Length: 336
Length: 282
Image (cartoon, rainbow over all chains, first blue to last red; front, side, top):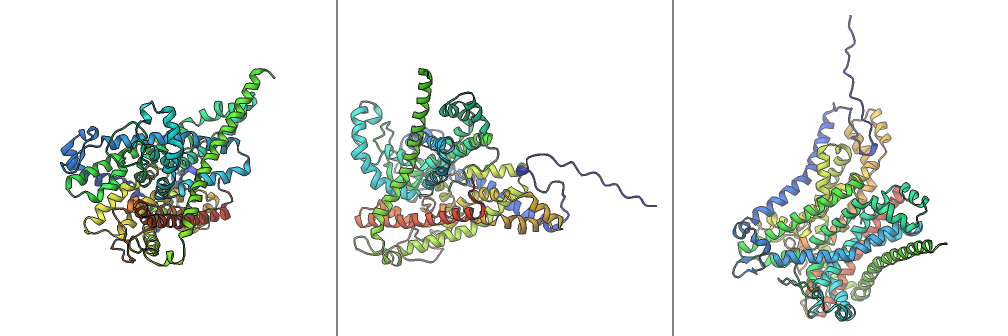
């Protein structure tokens, strides 16, 4: 007599949210083409980590001569002399950070304002169109921002913004010297307009992820609408909002064309926003094709390496913060 | 009402007004930029602008036909390389991406999404321009493809995830193998969304300049050879905007208007397609 062989029981299906669950768990593949399909997809997915490694490796290997020659002093030396073959990035590091922080200073209130307006105050019919218009800012190519900066923004700043700033705040070190046009100020403002759509889109999704019960609870306790936002909504989404801001910072740090066209491209450190400055990305854009010696090229690769590592770290921190609020979602990827 | 209540109400009103004002400023920036593009660019656009190549500096006339064709070729090639990889990685993330590898890929995609494009440009230069000894459109396409891949993988993943689980179960219950279920049922259902994601990605890289500076380089003549330097609209705008001639500045505005129009049309089509398929997504 034969007995039916007892199959081992399949492992119990895990109870989790359907969207984040593996689709095929518990259904072991028997089909060869299934395995091939999975392998092809896995190979394509592996391209992404591979790209990250390859980019890092290429930058590092090409930067080695400069790293060996200048050591860590590369970071704080401010001489950049292709003739004497002495390179230091302090002015670029300063310019990159200063222009990005200036941009954040302008962009953060703007974009948080947009996000709060769109999620909390705007009438329903207005939300989609305004969100769409703000996100359109992200669709404008960088070089077009640069063009607009050179021919519209800088003349505007020269005649309407700089004179009043000078007369009121001219005594502070931040508003010293003659304004020639291409300057830290112009770079910061252009960057600010460019990162508003990113910060706004991500902040908006973070605020949308705040449960309605948070708002209702605050309102039920007699809070005004603004008090509900300030005391119940913003604290709940704080990590995500900070993440959104850091994400904007990452964008600003690596932005190239628009900044190159308006920031003045001078290897100098000046705290006055009226003076020209330089950024790491702009230096690569301007000097890479002129780099005739190997050491010059290597120095530029080291600048690229620094910039890449800086933006990767900034982006990673931003993503971790955003994921804490909107777990695993591709937040902001829908921003045009 | 006590004074305190009045003050709280007033604060609420003031903050609401402030938030409205800030939103207005953000939208105003967009309107101003678009208006300037139209005002300064539209008058220079005529038939010759689309059909002729640039003339030497100082001479009147000429167009940007070479740049328009070049943009099409370089971006098209970039899409050919980038779309399969990006979409494939996205399907992987949606279908098998719940484990540790999925997490890693997702994280790397998000991080790469914010990489400075100029860095991608010099990496492409190292592999494709330095060994070959000359700049090429192909190198530019590869750089743009690298920029597209992380973007596409995340949008594709999101679109595939929207497909209801019941469709999958129905196909499997009918005895479909998994790969066919995935490709013919799941991916096909999500196809509109995936195409939208690709269009948005293409629109995004079509405006890129920085990664093309040391790869496609730019070319003042009409060229169809992808192993040689080629012009794009974005490179043309950069050269014209930073040049000394008024005529060039005029052409820069016109080129910018054309490029912006191109990007906007692709974006709007993408948005319209999504709207047709999914209603309003958010």
